[in-house]
Length: 178
View (spheres, rainbow, N blue to C red):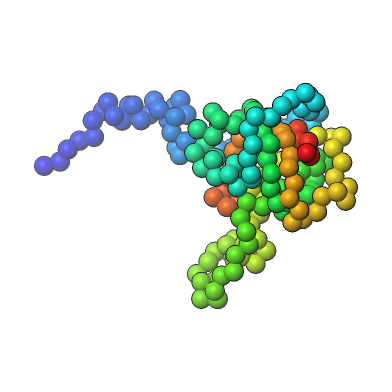
């Protein structure tokens, strides 16, 4: 005996996806990335109530809905190990925090890994928490790879990044080095 899929459930699923309640049904586009203001900055009197290490912040965004409620739009203080200090294609300086320690993989396991995983095992994981600095914040020679740094900035949330581990990064804007 064959059971038919009830029409009400089908219509409910269509309505949920139409309103964006089912994340997996609609792909994220580049235009969905939060706007990063090149001129915004945090007022000096802002006190930060939320403190994270980079790994904890990235882990929290595994549950994006709850993490957005807790963090998005708020000023956060994030501490982490610097993976890179660089400029993006628009000339904005950012600090990329290392979330995972580099791993050593046995040769037998290397044969079964994807090219991206092989690169990560050799060079380390890419930065998964990105902190865009305010334009007046200087990074010349004061920050280097491997150094532990604390920044304070506004959380923009989770952004899709196909090159990253689990294909997302967490972005902060208007960051000041503490």
